[in-house]
Length: 387
Image (cartoon, rainbow, N blue to C red; front, top):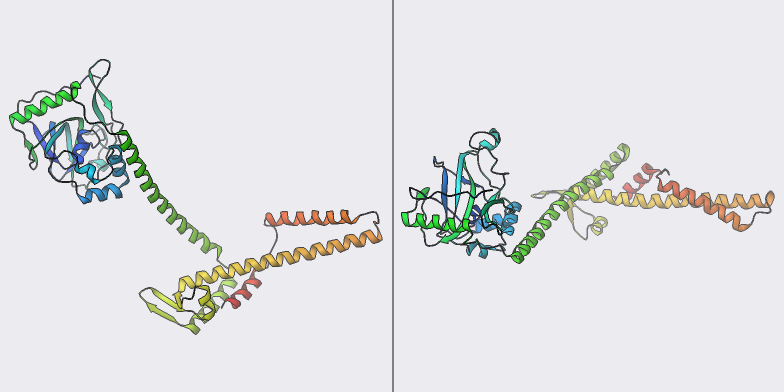
């Protein structure tokens, strides 16, 4: 692709002042949309001026709170706010082409092919100027950097930018509001430095690979930790829902449980405060709740259900083992009786092998969940014991 040539201006270069680090991100082709509360009829080349403002604490909070911004900054090798404060300020840092201005409503209400927004500035490629090492000619290349997404309101004006060129900073240039003009001397200086970048006589500072790798590592650790916390919260929510379903009793048992719980609440009292209903615990239940004297009704009910289910499961297993042993004992007696009266050739080892076979069959059936339990009767007993 041929080099995009910048015509020498007949008039002073137009300038837009932008705070750091966003001024640098614009001239590096990363920030493709500038959000303003006002519009302009101007279209064409303009210089980007980095204002004198020191990057604020708010920018640092956004850096850490917004995943996309954090990754964008990490791509630049920026590790902390000190890196942002070291960027040039009160300086012209590059040029860019303003290709269109429209309100924030365009994104929802217009197609990507509509008039001046013939491309989507949020997803279109980022282009940079680069000199070919073999031919010495300038060419346009796609930027490998992550684009910086922007937040905007429908009433905001979106300035679509492209063809960014970073230049050797022109320092000690005070900024102004709105679009403003450079004097002839500074305009000539900006154009000259722009051409130097295109010729390859000046190269923008390269991102330190080690710092970039470290910044991306820290970003991943921070955001993976945040994602892990989110996933854990989701796991806890789903876990509580699943546990609640697993702690549901049959209709009859649930009725008895609620009746018993209501009697307990009436006997021990319920206090009302900022934390909702708090139930006073008797001596038995204080041991269950690590000596606490009151708990919320929801916590009490949940823990009681857990306790009952645990006791039911314990008794269920014990009952299952008792039934299994009785069955195996009966089988062992029958086999020995059969050997005595009708099968004297059968040895004791063969008899025990048959009992082992039967035990394996029973355990396989248990693993498949085919063994039935008498839950309601056990539950009723455990409810009375718990309260």
